[in-house]
Length: 107
Length: 119
Image 1 (tube, chains in turn blue, red):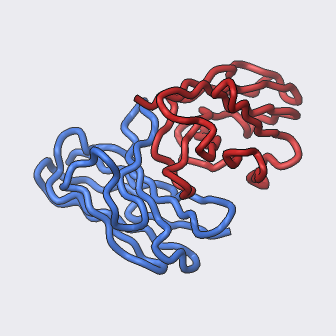
Image 2 (cartoon, one colour):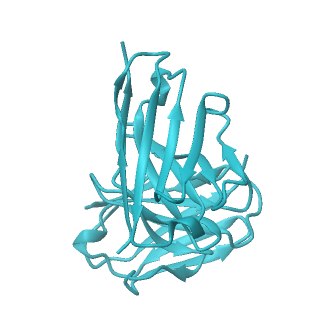
């Protein structure tokens, strides 16, 4: 099983600041990595697929990068609605696995 | 508009059974692989099971293998999860999720149905 480790667990930032979230995988997943946002009381929403492709309807301030075992989700300038939990997920191997999440909270 | 609406959750005693349903609309259901993903209270996301468009291939997480059965009805645009021998650690919000094209990530999610296993 591929283990995904997200860091930090919590990121405390102010609106307008840049957020950088990390996801590391226990073995290479090539670029088969997705990022999701989950706001309180809501279902997850796909943000990024295949490491760097923005999903439909996602604002341009969200971007993803990386390949192999190290991946980054960047939010260029935090909006109030961006304070949420973010998960990465790999589809390189079965079972499909998710990271433990990074909570982006208001400082 | 894609919609996924789960139902069938509830309170069940350990060892009991439940059948979850997911009603799909707004897309050609028979063309897409489908999935169940769960989230225990206050915890992260856990993939549970996947089924291909034709039901030819089915996969399960080790934690549910032998106890849960995924199925689908393409004529009725519905996905199911039969859950037997339920345990306390199966307590979670169960999401139905559609794959993005033929890739095994998830572009649409339902709002979830809560399963609570407790005596």
